[in-house]
Amino acid sequence: MNTVAIITAREGSKRIPKKNIKLFLGKPLITYSIQVVLESGLFERIVVSTDSDEIASVAKEYGAEIPFKRPTELADDYTGTDEVFIHALRWLHENDKIYNYACCIYPTAPMLKAKYLKNGLESLIKNKAASAFSVTTYPYPIFRSLKLNKQGRLEMIWPEYHKTRSQDLPEAFHDAGQFYWVDVEKYFSEKRIYSKDSIPVFIPRYLVQDIDTPEDWEMAEKLYQINQHE
Image (cartoon, rainbow, N blue to C red; front, side, top):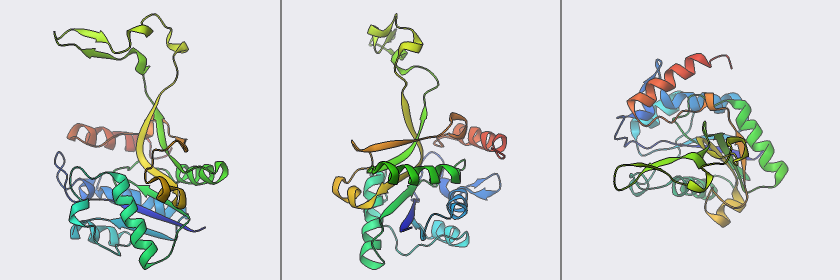
């Protein structure tokens, strides 16, 4: 299978310094993603896109490649995943080979499972989609969401659903922040993972946790320990 994994791991992390290589239950966080990618057996190459020599050193130690250093202009707080992913793929196409399928994987997904990576690739090919990525359900109907108004009082964002039964509301999903499979040719045409031709890879909520704050980190460690044998 003509596939490549791109793990995106920049140095700058404000709320959790050195997050990508901070020890998560005794091992650098990024190594969990690398190990699952290796375990999956799906990829010809596992490439880490980083601007950090320290991250590069850790990634190499655990089996990933760093064939190029990410440009500084693609390592700030405002650069999106698409720009980084496209840069890595273009570098590989110019210096290595053209890949048919690629998967962008976050270094902050310790609960990533190989079976969902496999499901994603199979679904992408079977459905001839442009992209397939991890999503999970919201724990509560989003159409019942509340906000604070200018007076500091609570009000519904969608008051038209005030009397609608929860079971009659459409189910909603959010990005699980783990991985993004793409058909490379289609991706280069659209230049965005979120497209009209995207399909979901469903991940159970108990395997999903954003890691943006120290509280998130603590929760992720607890969830990982609970789900080790899932």
